[in-house]
Length: 179
Image 1 (tube, rainbow, N blue to C red):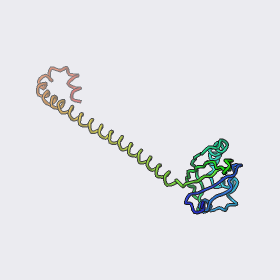
Image 2 (image 1 turned 180 degrees about the horizontal axis):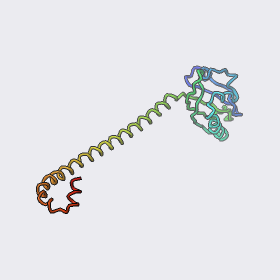
Image 3 (image 1 turned 45 degrees about the horizontal axis):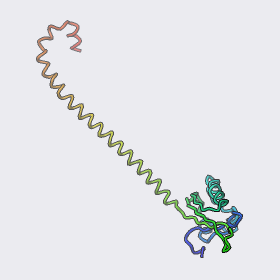
Image 4 (image 1 turned 135 degrees about the vertical axis):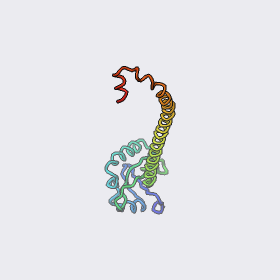
């Protein structure tokens, strides 16, 4: 029945070493049962994730509790794919510990979609910042125009009124005014 399941299924013995992989696992990895059993399956785990696999599995194994972890597993074509792995202890009919059974699901497309979602979220935040800066620039230009208009009008009105007093200014001020 496990060979017809769509997920990647594995089992360990009471020693914690893998003793079985279903057909889907073997097809996914492109390896044989003989290559995968024991700790052979770790050859397909991304080098950066191997220690995390042991750190996730061994404490759960010794405590006989379920576990879940994510890591990259090399597919038959050489591409590393993110998988989520879940495992639970299995027991005999007499309630004796028999090892673990677990499954892996390829989540690489979900991981890529999450990265893209985060990228789009950042772009959206950057665009909102740019819009705020643009609006501030437009507001500053509008304020500058509103302030400049009355000042320009006052200067224009003041020139004829001050024109006759220019002759009364000391020579140094008249020279400075012409510059």
